Image 1 (cartoon, rainbow, N blue to C red):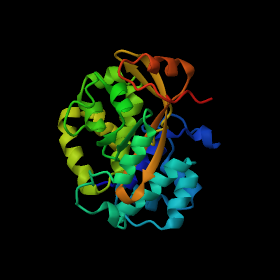
Image 2 (cartoon, one colour):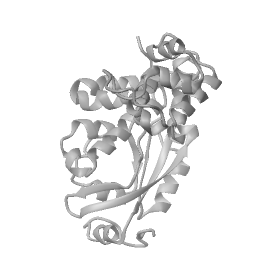
Image 3 (spheres, rainbow, N blue to C red):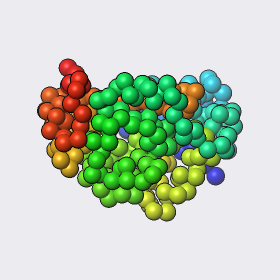
Length: 279
């Protein structure tokens, strides 16, 4: 049985063309990407050991091996971070993610006061499961009519994968779906992530499970929304980690003047001191 660590290494190996690393092309082969022997050679480990890692038969690689594999795969900083995280949970060392307790849904008064001070800015408090725990009135205006906030306990991940309106609201639905699936690996606990995964997998199907298991680290560029009343909006996201709460405060900023003007036309958006596009 494989492990998330092995799945990630294999997926990255399959995505690399040998020529991009200055390696010779060995010609047509059954599997795409880099050969195990090429990756093992670059990392300074044996092919047999790499095979054990990928197949989940070795669950406790040393820090040196993890770093060597990251170097050999030419991983980006965010991909390296994910590789280190997967090595910890695969080896059972990440006790904070092993707790079965449900994630904290309450938002501290200080954080709620920060949201109030951000009005009329577009902001929300969420967690890696996608729960929308608190939001400004401007966030409600931007998402109004899309169905995202229709439930008593709105969840962005569930909305993206189960509500057909999400594919219209998010102009780059595939990119947003990649982000939401990836973030489940960083959920407050393995138990909470598994509960949501078990709920979504039967109804969301391959669109969800393929993304969850690909370990594709998202780029998180500008968020493009197709608002029912305001046309297309391009928003930049600034995220503040509330580590002690396992929550995030996300502020959305207009990426261009066209978005600023489109926001001004939204009927329910507060107007005093409106945030402008940043250059």
